[in-house]
Image (cartoon, rainbow, N blue to C red; front, side, top):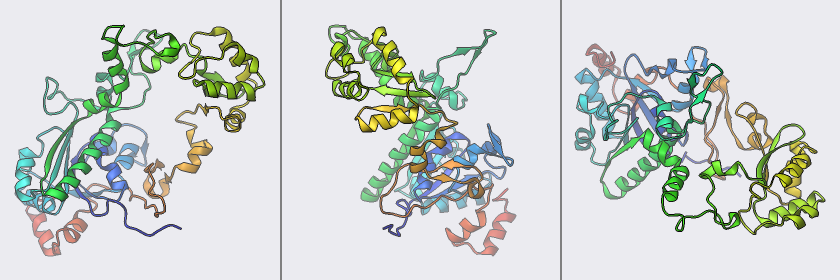
Length: 411
């Protein structure tokens, strides 16, 4: 039975001053029911025109990152607008400055200014390279944090020109995860102690932290070989770092199926035995039983050739059914284009449809079991909620709003 409850963050109010990708730091908060008020310039966040695809004149990036938020347009060059900002902060839990650090301070709305208004405010500034270090003043975009952190390996085309290869964007997606955790931690402490906080987050730092396994492995390998070794199953010989060390794997490897690819993951001896029994090839287990754990049969080309032929004999769907029946880890190999057709994806993911949200988008992945899910609202147009926020949040009468408009508060 589904219980009717308020969303988990229904009593959280966030004032967000953001442009472009860093707005992602509050997307999950809005998905979870937080009241996120996006304060924009009268011209608006030009994220609506950035990157592709563009859907009916508006970017997918805006539809996704700013869904569930309210937009209020304020010209912070006007004192009347700055006073509105201060009043919003008085009743808020969080202020997000998702642009270059100090952008709000230039208007007298930095952390030190706002904490005098609301001592419990959690102020989080999100930027490319952070507030310190030799790169702090460098302009940048999202892929910069992936190249900086070592995530992207330069590629070359047939004419010898270097180009950005397809890759998963890390910095733009990792920063919201770390930032959201930090913000909520700050709010919990503020509600318990009355003490706010100033959080500073760099998207570059988040990208490096997200890819910790590779960088930490390199740091480990910089130590003497008698101190840091490889796996017992590899006779303690060091493999290349992280997934680079998977290239020579055999019992943990990608294989062609009859209609696609599968990932075979029988690195534990028990799983390898299950596979051989299910495939009617116990002779393979008898010849190459392997170690108990983490044995990929590295470099065993003879075995790899046999497995290549075995996996080509069945479809991906048949191998997935085999994995369940014989308790063997086998996974499908999808693409960003076809994952939406995967039955597991269809069962698990909630799609926010373009009919109501402007674009087809993946919903928030975590579920509160037994509670009714709520959908975030469509991403706003510039200043769409200006009057509603002023009336409903600050209690302004129409006459006061009209007077503020005369003073240039809304541009």
